[in-house]
Length: 110
Length: 118
Image (cartoon, rainbow over all chains, first blue to last red; front, side, top):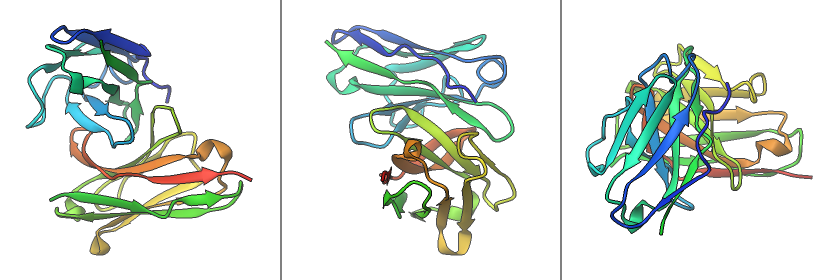
């Protein structure tokens, strides 16, 4: 049950794009298309932004997109806005009713 | 409106126990799997435990296995986490969350803080 690896930080100017990687193993990200991404603002509960690798829940702007290749999933935020500044966490199903989260990435809007 | 409200956190000494609760409203609780997730101060999210809708399936993170027990009472729309033999490293905000889609969680509570310190 090792955490998925994310870069500690990422940044971009308003209007630009930022991509966050989430690297797991063949036991989690590489096997299951059950990767989700969560946004968390300081002092708040996480909010799901992407599920099943690339699907967006209703109400999530289409500026948020997800993808996966092999053992690495990615979240791209296009057209960065000030309110996108937050911590982002990936998660993946790892079999046997086990969930694993990523280490988290702090996104800064410059 | 879907709501999840955690309670039961507090300041305890190492080795002590607590029972965390998560009261659900605004949806048919018995139809949904649930999880507990924790977040140590300034740290990332850590999955703690999972329970299926009728409690037939449960699992735990290795870090809490044997010390924590998840349960639910569908008649009371409530999820529980019994936390025993607490350690300093269990200090965290504990969130309950509703299973929305395949292993993604669409509603979260506001969290309850557990502090383990002598």
